[in-house]
Image 1 (cartoon, rainbow, N blue to C red):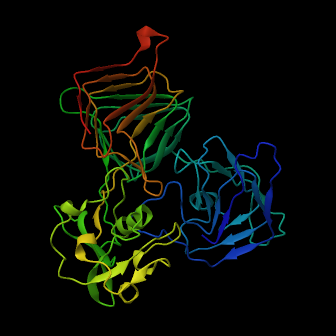
Image 2 (tube, one colour; image 1 turned 30 degrees about the vertical axis):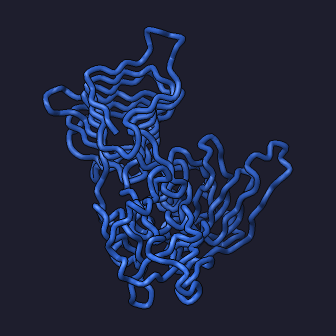
Image 3 (tube, one colour; image 1 turned 180 degrees about the vertical axis):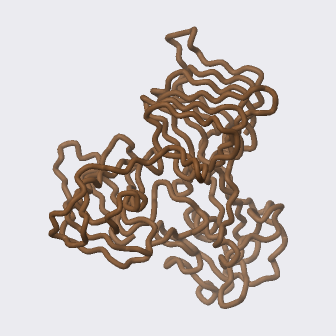
Length: 418
């Protein structure tokens, strides 16, 4: 980002206010630090906002080579961020909508209120778009992409594959029905929140709806300058870095979980805080003949490459004080989608003859993993479902409905694993 604006979000006495006005933020190229990983809580944008006591008005945001102009860093879906009367890169409403990253993209983020917005990049213009004319459609029939809010009744009735690139958010007034033969393929870290009603039904004859991960090519992993050697997969082993054309290992003196996360992310993978550090007896033998190139690597949240972290020592600094028995051994996880969550306000929903797989990763920046299916208040019907190959629990129940016994959820004839 160029500007990260935030005060205490829990300032209940309203003593703190921050106003950004009459500024030009232009011609910046802001990209995700690891191009193969999707953002959730920490999107990269020229201007990001982290609390709802920040106000933006009469600013020019013109960064055509950045995917977004404005981003929400506030994890509070019921909050609204005041960003009215700004120029946001274009006057076309759909284009402007695509340049804002907020609750329309990830259901747990605050909503950015940017309308009215300026229709000219003259900061003093009186030309503004007063009322929204563009409305995002939940289903794009041409591209077969789905995503965004469901406030009314929507039905996926045509069999085939639908791609989900932004969270599906079934609002309290919404109802989503998924019929036999439908497959939803979610980009990683993208998921579904149901605050209304979800009906997903198969036909028990091979036409079960499937919720799964969309496989994508991650561009940044082949020249990362970091690798794991000797493990059972490319996601575990002895950590090596490339410095000045030479590959070598990293001593675990001072090694932190934050540094481990960056190493995984450089390779296009993610870190699971419950399963990441290999014990010395688990570290494979491969790489022991290579030099030890780094030690005391302690990266901070803003750094993106363990080889350039400010708090790190190169081989000249630690003078053979480390041996290969102290090399870093690391396990990373592959990406997965963010799972299906039935919220506290969800009406009694039904999953019948449905398959849910390859879920679990919620937010790689906060190391958050979630069940494939989570029921916040459990009074739903799960029958003949298959939940498997997830990076966390198969099904998670937060609270059970003990007040209405006839509404208590049940699970019948189902296969549930991790």
